[in-house]
Length: 142
Length: 159
Image (tube, rainbow over all chains, first blue to last red):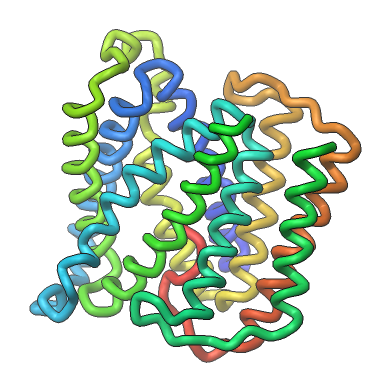
């Protein structure tokens, strides 16, 4: 039950975050928005980190430095997401984003990129991919 | 329409990439240490981008509803809730619930024009399109998760 509540709030928060960022972007433009988002988010993280302090000493050095660049992707995510919400509205922006996200994860899994365990595909997954793309086409032309 | 669709697709792909990078880093470095580092690097990147692209005006801050300044906190809430949801429910159910919650909320925002966003009318055809797309997501996820039940205690889902 508790898990369901967390999952429900996850979805709600993901959508809310998009809305807040889009509205902030309306007022101050995308680049100031993304800076504010990361500044405020960093404060939030530091508060939580202050309690959990889960850093594994030396763990960071075991990774190629490229992994630290994940944060830079976040900049792109916020800017493109808020722009798409402004231009498309929530439903269409969120749906397209999810489809792209899921397809990209699928391709990464298939190819075993970034050290992910390589997985073979099955027919069911390809049916899913086909349905997703059909849905996108129907939506675009309806 | 074109630019909006392009942006949504780029955002989705980048989220996917970021999820993979973050999941691996969380493993080696600790989940919150990772999230903190990610936001820190993101802040540096944002400042660079801001200096480079300029544009926008701080004057707008005076008029903006203060609530909208807290998207960053909400983002941290996302990381926390996704992590706990997956720990408690397992990735399969957690991801499904997150997707349903996210999309139904998005739909409500469009239909009722919440948060000062313009109301978006959806045609019957578009609703069919959404339904087909959603069913595709669930079919794909079903067959994916069935394969790797024992994997993913990480935050590998959507975040």
